[in-house]
Length: 418
Image (tube, rainbow, N blue to C red):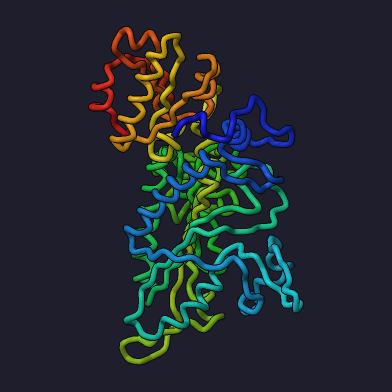
């Protein structure tokens, strides 16, 4: 893509009411637009990153047997009354609305109820199970506080998968697969080394749920980390019983701030009993389906990466989710030799399937380099009158700052995506 055709522009400052680092950087770099507190629109660069993240998550969910679908955002009040989650005194983050006939509707903040109800039409026998259904869907949560940028929004995109199993053994086997898949996702997007499987409250469903907490001072959660075992405990459940269960000593734990980037819950028969989701086993006896819930906020994950993998100059995207692989920068020259060479190199890279943002704008070198650092594409390639004379291109690694020169042919031959 030619940068001269990109309608977004970089900014020197973010809106004055924006306090979150991730949102400040993403707004300044032209990835997102702030509509109001906790509500952000994805601009072309941001949308590319978000789709890359979705692709990483989708690959892992499909690998463990997930079937992708899309449920509605509008929710039937009756379903949620059946599970006692419609009342604002029970769930205080609802956005609710009414039809013209005064019938109440909700904007979904999660989807256990509607998907469980849907499954009653497709599950009858043990032969119909297990089922692992997931979606990427916009959620709405009336958060009291929305000051963490896209790490905590009132409207946000989320991947939620729900498992439907015959028994606890089948459920636990999938639960462990999901846990490993989540680890793969966080490794792929560049934050696996600072993301911990964290024991948290299982509520009324199970003894523990598992959060995936990423260390950052911008986090709203406090966790206690065991570096040795690569696990953590949420402050909310830390007690002697949890330490006996996990074989940990209080003295070996380090207190850290973190942001929750994913969670997995065992739901038992909580929703299947309320909404009458049953199946007949091999003997013809009716049993309630065992369920699990597995969530990742795609936008929150994007915000977390932006928060953590950035420096004083701007964003630093990992190759796996960067909006483009290469930022090709043309430094204008009097005879336009560099322009011709850059145009041809841009076409050649695109032909090789390499994603390129081509800065063909008529700006000074300093402005282009500052924009490149702010946008954070992993590899910067400069073509100028000087590089033409030397028959090379200048290559800079955004993460390390290392600069070297190679021929165009060698660059294309050796360019990798790691």
